[in-house]
Each structure stands twice: as structure tokens, then as C-alpha cells.
Length: 467
Image (cartoon, rainbow, N blue to C red; front, side, top):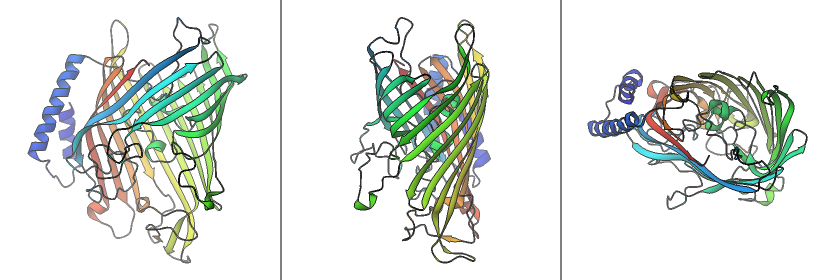
């Protein structure tokens, strides 16, 4: 199936009809055939799973919630991939358009097996009100073999190392229906509602994460709970309206004093919040999220996002839209009716539509065995972009804290399709295709510089332990 998909995509999308080198194709084909044989021998799959939780619930039927105990858990995911086609402008990986897409810096015909995430966590429950959690993480910003720089947790020797992503304590029910969390914690941006509903973080980050709009983690304080909850006669919750309010350093996993100078005496915090509703036994999800922070006096960022989703036993769909307003953060050096070095606002936005379906279940256990996953995104890095203007992108102007990115001339369309196999409950093997297309809005640009794409054929693996 993967070979057929690869043939189809190469024929349909490769505008230049460039053939992949024979030796590369043969090696990748043998690799795919080997993995496909393992899939056939292994059996099948679960169509949906939640791999988003940094520290999952650990109470077993034989334990009470107030039992003093510790719990070690972990999970990892990665992919065996081949870069089928590379965007011609960024073919060498020297100057990625976005800097956030997973394979933007990988050259054409490169193939490898790499990890995108490895988590190792530990939870400790003191009693029924207090608990502590820590998560060590390794997360690759670019995949193996990329010519671009990697994330901070790849050290100077290139070794795969881990960093502290979460470390916090929780005070459950600090007042009725609300919990307090302090430390390096999950932000209410997308991990609390969006990723659980999507359920396939191992295949790709959700759109705000993928485009670097907001981080999943920060150091701060969060108060979260439920305004209203409806339960049936057995005590099972079938509807609720909840919230999160958080204040964070806006440094994510970086220590707050890194690179600090006398000019940084004002430490601008980031303020997060969301309100969500779950109805009809969690079949319907509605969530509104927003965050705000000051970059410098006179330059502010405001993000908002809405998501609505619906799921049944064998399928789910969801749609999301986000917008980020960045005030006075684009510098125009030339343009009609404008003075040199005038500043203007940037408006980032994106729409994402995603779904999954279970096609086959086990006759004895009713567990999902085989499923399909698909997603489509539209991304605009600046809705205010004007092709008649010249933007300062090489350096910062004296009246600006932001160097305008050349990537803002490109709108992008992302598509992903996957087959989900599960040989056992804890392991998923998912052949998939990953496509990100670019369209240049700059005047006078033609050919491949005007419109091109990155495409990757992958087999993604995901496994958990003690979770």
C-alpha cells in the first residue's frame, strides 16, 4: 500500500516529473516491504489513541486515589521516512521558509529513521489532594540528516539528550471544582482539549504548535476546573463546562534568566486562558482559547483560537481556526504612502480540518484493529502582507523588536493521510504521507519559486510503557 501511495503521489504532485534515483528507490522499497511484512505478521490496529498527556491518570481499580505511591511511565514516537520531493527554493535546507515545519530542512531523496519525541515521566501522589509530576523529554526540531540547526536539547556533539519539560505540583480541589498547578506546566493552548480530540500527535503537531504560535509548556501558575458538570444516575459525567487561567514566564523550557541584560528589567509575562464545553457523553467538544503578552512597550501579541469537534464510536471530525495579531512588528522600508521604517501589524491565521475513522474491530474484544486518519491545514503567516511593500527582514530597525521573516510572503497548504495499524494495545505502526505546499505572493515571481512543495513518505511508530 505504501509503495502504491508513493507511486501515486510522485506522479500527481511532482511538477518536474523528476525521477528518484534508482538505488534510493530500491533501498527504500526493500525497507518498506520489510516493514509491511512485519505489519502483516503482527496484526492490526486501534484507530484512535490519546498520546498527548504529559502525566496520565495512574489510579488502578485496586488503588484508592489517596494511596501514597509513585508511578514511572513513558512513550516515544518517530518515523522511517523518505523525502520524496523538496521545495526548490529551500532544496539545500540552508534557509527554511518557516523554520517550524518538520521536514523543511531535509534535502530531496534523504531517508532515515528518527525519533520526534521520547518522554520519560514520574508521578507521585502524596494523598487525595496533592501530587507531583516530572517529565524528561527529547524532541527533535529537525529530523536526522537535516542540514539545518537542531533544537536546544541536541547538544554540540549531536548526542540525543533530554531536558526537563514538566516539573510541578498539583493541589486538587483547592476550592470546589478547581485545581491549582505550579511549576513547569502544560499551557491551556492545545494540549488540554485539542490534542486529546485529535489523538494523533505522533503523526503531526496541531496547527498552532506546528506553526510556532504558542508553546505547550511554560513555567507559571494555572488554576483550572469546571463551572458546571452534569452526571447521570451512576455518577458518570456526560457534560461539563470548564476553564483554565494561567500566568507564565513565556520562556517555555528555557530558564527565565537566559541572556538577560539590563534592558530586560521588565519581564513581560504571558497570560493564557480557555473555556471549553463537552456535551452528549463527550461526543461534542467546543473550546475557545486566548493568550496575550507584551513583546516590548508598544508591541503586543494577542492569540485566539476556536475549535469544534464531534465524535462517535467509530469516527471523529474537528475544525479549528486561529488568529495571532502582532502589533507594530513589521517594518516597511518602502511602500506607497508610507515613510521609511514605518511599522505595521502582522496577522497570522490558520484553519485545520481533521478526522479519523475505524474500519475494523476485533470480533472478540471490540477493540479497533484498522483505521484511517486525514488532515488538511491552510496557513497564512501574514494576512496584512502587501506585495507592493518592501519589508525589513535582514535585521531589526531601531524602532522595532522584530525582524520580518521572508517566510511571510508564502501561504501554505498542508495535507496528511495515514493508515493506523495496532499489533498490540501499546504499539501503533502508521504508514502515511506528509505534504506541505508553498505559494509565493511576491510580485514578479514565477515557476517553482512561485509555487512548490515538500513531500515525505513515512512509516510512523508509536509505543508506550506503563501508561
